[in-house]
Length: 362
Image (cartoon, rainbow, N blue to C red; front, side, top):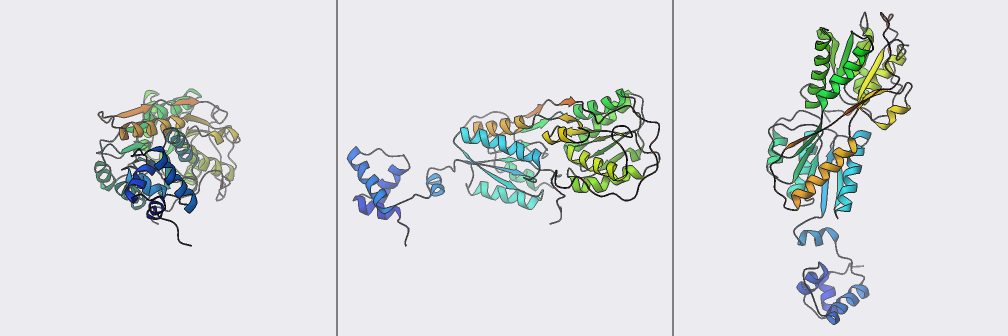
């Protein structure tokens, strides 16, 4: 059966399609009797206007977009959830895209912004930009907000956390417990948060007159799968570190999986601290000491800023740094002198608790 069109409604009501369209989208007032004729025609024909077409006819989509590296990662899901709450309260839908951390998929979201499928975009990327993202952002001034990870050479509003401060305090907490051989396993090379958290680790060591060896730092991804693989190197060292500062809670889970596979007890054999403050870490054995990020605030403030800009509020784009806090738990203890020989090859026993690895080349 053919779906009724606005022309069918207009013919049934004895009016022009333009008049019916303008009344339906709220841009025209009609006498009560005329409006009632349109209502009866809509009911008689079972006409249902196309929501997106109606929005575009008014010059806006009433929708925001948020692009995240992986929606199955609880950190990104929590940001998106809070952004969606703010958007809904302001009368916007929120469209969520998972980019799998691939720049081509991120750029595809900007195509939707250009075609007015959405009014504005919250961007969360987790890799170093090759210049294409920066160019796309600058083509859509006042319609993009950047969250969590930087895209250099852009003038969009940005919401980050105090990464260096967090890295410093996590490491200082380990030092205060007597550790001096503290390895850092952090995020990808060239990514802002990984660079800043490693800088905090180095500052805390320097203040304690500890000179880290080059092999005290490992680069990996912010995902359990690759982090578990990379963390295997920690347990092949002799002597092993007495403590590890992981650049994210997902990376810490990879370290914990390797520790269990190598029969290394945390914290009695090796202490472990993470970064993010994900709710799940309180359920681990042992519960994980971590730097807690204000995850809800990242989602809330980014959505509020985007809605302000779309409403015409003009101001100089600026970077906002949100505070972090150390949450001590039982994964940190007093060090032993040295950890014993390495055990056989590990298995990932944390699978399913956090998302698995993303194949960057897909």
